[in-house]
Length: 219
Image (cartoon, rainbow, N blue to C red; front, side, top):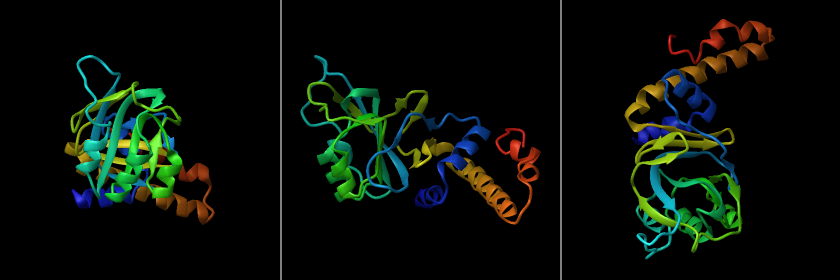
């Protein structure tokens, strides 16, 4: 798995997205962007499921803390916050703890807060938007280390997660080898095209039929 993470880190989200298209996998999480420390996030998913408070859920500890305590280098915390922007699904003390444990970064499908603290700790955080509004009394943890949904993208513990300036993608662990191999071929092909353009080739020739077929499932 470490080898797969290293290979993932060497790619960008656009190449991986193209590979996911070619394999017919929904793996692009829309609407997220980097808000804290710069840098690529690459690693294995450790999932956290949030939801509104209810009589059947008692917040005996703050959301995300168990996942942080169980994670470390090579792990990415993925918070399923249902895209909520009315309160944070992640905060500053969690960011400091995650950074101290060497966690690669955080992906929040919703708002996050204390992003200055995350930046000071050197922890990359991708989220929908910043907010100062606390989760306390507004959201609770309903589980962690279990499959979650980020809109139409399923994320299971151990899936590969890549986040950079281009967005966030999730690669199912069961198909990681084939998707990464395809992404590497696509990246290599596009690098050769970039060299041809730099050498003076007309872009209309470089980006011809073969470029259009890069994501085709028939090629």
